[in-house]
Length: 144
Ligand SMILES: [Zn+2]
Image (cartoon, rainbow, N blue to C red; front, side):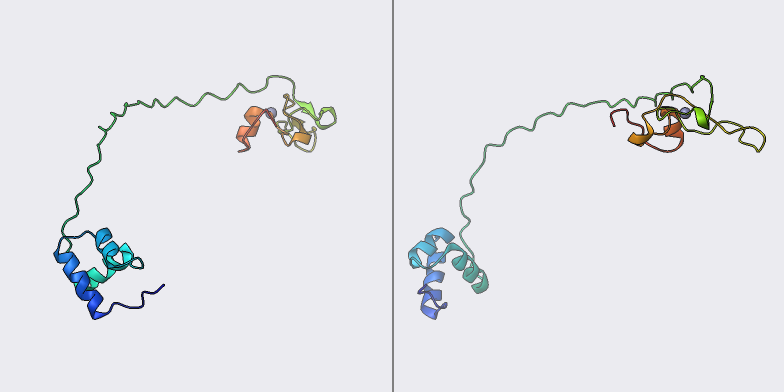
């Protein structure tokens, strides 16, 4: 790059070009191949020169599309499925696919009973049936 600094001659040339109504681009072009539009713009700003207002390019403004109003209807939460009305199971009767939610009395004289409803499977990390998963605060998904 041969351009080193804004000499007084260069600054005067720029002042004249701006006074003649050049645009930044044309002034940069007139000053030589090593002068960029950005250099000219910065120098002119520092010198306090006012550019003739460049012709503004008017873009065809597309009319804004009318947005369709969509009414969002909040559906009420579906009621939880009815609890299992099957027989509660004892621990020894549980299969890997029966709910392990404790329902029984669980005192010292009678064995603890469990819900026993079909569940996703213990090995799939779904030890409870859907209502009990929800009650336990777990998100129940059948697909896993
Ligand atoms: Zn259950």
